[in-house]
Image (tube, rainbow, N blue to C red; front, side):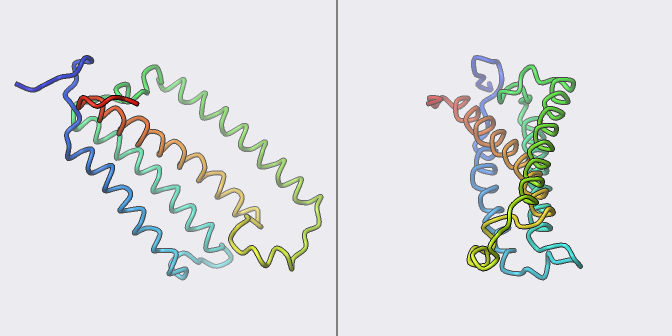
Length: 171
């Protein structure tokens, strides 16, 4: 007889928790090694970081898909990891609000950058520590959305709920 928790769902299998808590960090470590081969991500006028960050955003989006697939595979739903009440209309509203705020912030930053004179010698001492082009700033904006959603769903949602289902204290 299978054990179920208070919500009537089976406990999260150890293999699923291991896949997420060991597999994803291991994959992202290997992904970070791609930084050592910039030629893989340099296309024409597009900066290396723009393509790397865009690819990383796509990986984060895929990670969300993998988590949702894994939930279905083990008999859980998105509501079981804290996404109750997030129907398509609500998700659409949240996405529209995020995009509106992000575009407003992006436009404000773009305007501010045109109003300031930067000392190129000082900025040359900070390579890779600031987004000096519009392409880079836009890529970071997209990355921020996907990274945040992905990490919250993975760790705050999936991992914590999985451990609680196995009898661990939430705190």
